[in-house]
Length: 201
Ligand SMILES: [Fe+2]
Image 1 (spheres, rainbow, N blue to C red):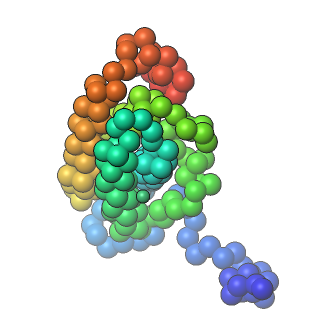
Image 2 (image 1 turned 90 degrees about the horizontal axis):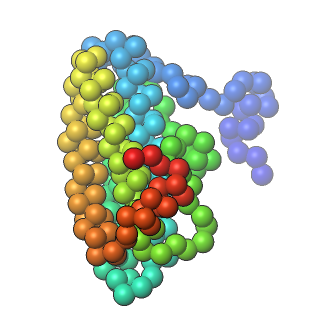
């Protein structure tokens, strides 16, 4: 059965999209089109990476094993929930600026800079390492985007990035980092892990 959108397309020959991704609609919030466009673009990158980190937490919540299973099973789900809230905050800031928030998994997969993990299970040390790498990437791009936003006068985006995104990621890194120390990953393992996820120090 065809939905209304496809019927409309057939009847009028029009595209179903009312606004293209990568554009910003007018918003009377006293911010230049150029500034809103730049903020929406960097927010969409952070959004795609945050959605990937959120899903990485759920993967690890399900697949964790070992003597720390229960505490990590709970911790990973707590961080998943907090990242899910940030996803909504980021997406709604993009819409507030007149932009279009990235939403669907295939688009997120094409956009994220976080390395794709295997479908199978990995040990705790590797799980924690992947999380730390993803957090650091998001922290870097969030600090950069926050600076650009304030330089353009977009105080609202700057405040959200620093107060909500940056602080949450730093706080979650504290917990994952302390777990990492407990997992006893050796320096040589860390070096090998870095090459696996394509990260650079
Ligand atoms: Fe669960």
